Length: 246
Image 1 (cartoon, rainbow, N blue to C red):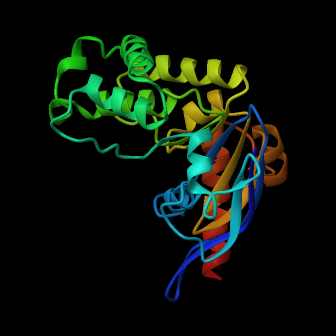
Image 2: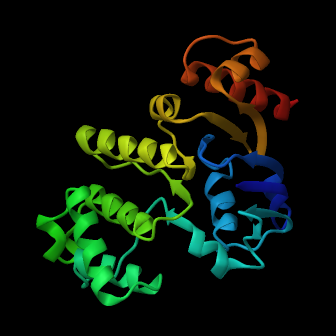
Image 3: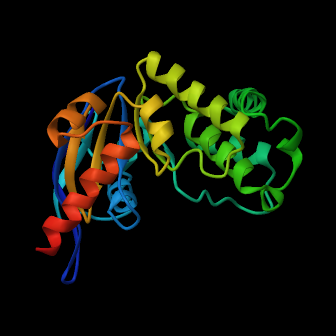
């Protein structure tokens, strides 16, 4: 469902993302992990057509994300790391606007907005202006916007940052339910406990280069490591840093 073909991004003399080749299967939850500045958000922005690749391409459902951005966005729900809304639109109005932008008639947009506000615990806040929302509320509203058109793919950048424990669990359960319906989920996160529970496979990126990919057991075996995903992640990124320094 998602195919990276030598995707890379260069800024002057700095390579933010080295040629990335990777396939994510339909219905898979794939975790994209890495330290700060590793290239995760840059990669996601290229997937969404926000940044132009320096080379290579990424395909979603066979469509080139840069050459066919509108068609890609019909199939994708996107949650950025920091959702930004029109401050003086109400939560309900924002959801309705997004639904109508996806082509739903006003009546259907209203119905979908009401359902998602209830499902994401924002029913009471639906008439509040977005400027008054906490970070956690903005995250939930952003995820509702990403899911309002029943996309085949979800691309999520730090989806549970800022959520309280109950909301975090509810979001994870919702993502697992979506994957069970065949939705492909590409998620970037620093929360390795969440990634270990949620993801079928993970990829670890370090200083713009993919240094490991596979299931946790496969990555453990390749790295000759044991323990949790956090333990394996720290070992792999430490070894990658040492190799880069040599």
